[in-house]
Amino acid sequence: MRILVLGAGGVGGYFGGRLAEKGEDVTFLVRERRKQLLENNGLVIRSVKGDLTFKPKLITKTDKTDPFDLVLFSTKAYHLEEAINDLKPFVGEQTVILPLLNGIAHLPLLKEAFGDDQVIGGLCFIETTLNGAGEVVHTSPLDRLVFGEPDHQGSERIQRITDALSDTKAEFVLSDHITQDMWHKYLFITVMSGVTTLMRAPIGPIRESDGGRDFIRRLFEEGAQIMKASGAPIDNAIVDKHMQLIDQLGYDMKSSMQRDMEKGSLIEGKHLQGYLLQLAKESHVDAPLLSVVYQNLKVYEKMV
Image 1 (cartoon, rainbow, N blue to C red):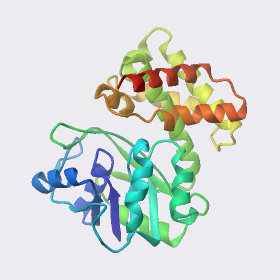
Image 2 (image 1 turned 90 degrees about the horizontal axis):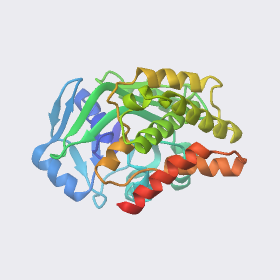
Image 3 (image 1 turned 135 degrees about the horizontal axis):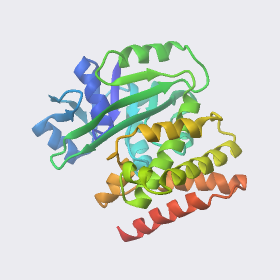
């Protein structure tokens, strides 16, 4: 299977690197500047699960090649439209798009660009970043990528994809309920990124502060209420489950949005908190805590 990874950053670089390490046919679609760096230094992964350095196969948007079988679509939401345009020349009628973006808002755009049947469900849980040398730094054992058919299970193509993604140092998991998984992840990352950016702190101090855990729970409950009112297929016990996960997180765990803010980078507030507030408005659900979280993000965007 010919696999194209969109980007070679913290997410695409890590999961694509683990697939290449296994021996899969992996190519990275990158910008020219990133291509030069990777050609000079190789793709370097510094990971608690084992370091890796190798010379990756690289293309840019102007290169010509046959369509790929599978695309790991791992860009940030604020680059979504540009990434779709860059990717189109490398997608054929049988190409499968596996999106790894946070949230839900990207799905209609991907399906419009490539067709409903070519976009499957996907998400990931991982704590990675790029350091000053452009190396992928993986700082915790968590490296879980979940994928699946959104409407029908047991297809031949999903079995081929499962075979290609198996037996690596990363955790690739086939799900029979990927749509629900994506909504659950959306709820978790919206709250996790929301509280850490609002408080400018890792999850530990927030969780252990007076009233902190209650604030986190109320934000989860608010988000879950919006999702249920919008018809999302979420578990009735998802708030309790997410609070258990919050309690298990390391004291110094930060959200990727928080790390982006610390760098003065663009953030995905509109795609995550903003889209959920849009759903709240459409469903006539009050969301005072989420509104405060989003206002904080909008102020940050005015300052960068």
